[in-house]
Amino acid sequence: MSDEMKPVEGLEQRLHRRRLEYDAMTIPEPDTQQAVQAGIRKATSQRKSRLRWMMSSVSAAAIILIFTGCIRVSPAFASFVEQLPGMDGIVSLIRQDKGLMMAIDQSLLQKVGITDEHDGTSVTIEGVITDESRMVIFYTMKGIQNPKNLMYDIKLLDKNGEDLPVGFSYSYPNPTSDEDIYENMINVSFTESSPPQDLTVVFKEQKETDANEWRITFPVDQSLTKGMKRVIPVNQTLVVDGQQIYVNQATLYPTRLVLDMTYDPKNTQKIFGIDDLQLVDEQGRIWTTNEASLPENGMSVFFESMYFSTPKKLTLHASGIRAVDKDKLHLQIDSESGEIEGGPENLKFLKKEIKGKDMILHFNITDAENANSGLSFTNIKDRKGKSFEVSQLGWSPSIAEASVTIKNGASAQGALDMELFSYPVLSPSPFSVDIPVNP
Picture 1: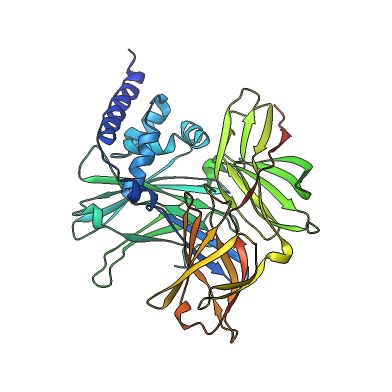
Picture 2: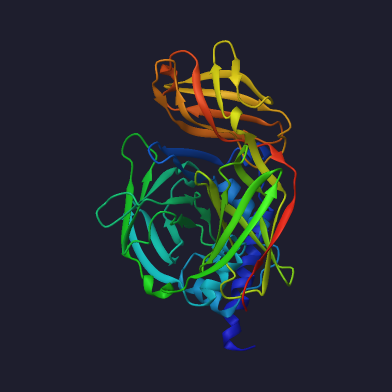
């Protein structure tokens, strides 16, 4: 065996041990179902939303369990892991993203290795990979006394200390083979801005008093992926359930492919999304997505990148659209009587709950069992014209029940006037479209 392959073999052995550890874990089903929560912060003037997903270590462990079934890694990727101590377990999370794996194989990872420590607990930004569309930040935590109780918020700041105008997601840290080191990554999306030259990542404990804060600042090396962007014109029109969808273009970056689509403003329905989107190449390889940006009249879908394995042909597949007639988007809810005026016929109000300053509305949506998206509202006003925002969403697909938390909603006066922002019912109309890619 060559020396080059020894790190690979060692990494695979460690990952195999990690899989055995997770196989032995008991993951309670209710905990897994309730582990993911979404909080929406809506910029009222721009009618756009930022979504942050936070998963417990239990759900993260479940994800690791899924993707450690068959571990084969390249020497380049093994070298990446060896350079970042304690990060071997993150391979199982990255492995689901073929494009990110290939980008790291191409030596596009920037090693950072900067640490901040407080009260015996340290946070280290190990490395970052970025292009014009996406950034992935790898970090580790060390010296955590009680990881089950460690809840923290993350902020991303520019050189002036201002919040970056980006969407990002993160999970709570996962254990590594070293019992004192925990790890994870932050996934950043640049939809309205470009990567910063200098970035500060702030971790802050969710405690009312004596909350620790870890702050790490580092320069972002944009030269590693400079000029690595390719625009692929598509310019095709689809008609789904009588609604026109324009597939405009695909933009290929090292970390992902962005497919831009717009909806005909003359459509009779408001399209909230397209389900089960995937790209399939001429070899039958599937390039998946689990993220999308939703502008007012369309969507940008983020797929795994095939930048370093460009296919000759791609076909876009989907199972149908989620849409509601435009004349049923606005509704009024009297939370005392439970009466709804307007809105879709299958939207049923269940109950109102007051929790502190917030109001939680519970709904049932018939014919929406097992839908993979939930219910939300925008432009919420009470009888006196006071505006409110949604702060948290809940969705139970097995029973098609949704909860919508309205921030400071306990002070609302009278019936609430609101507009649908997302709706889960799928119209099962499968379709596909070819996307030509030059070799």
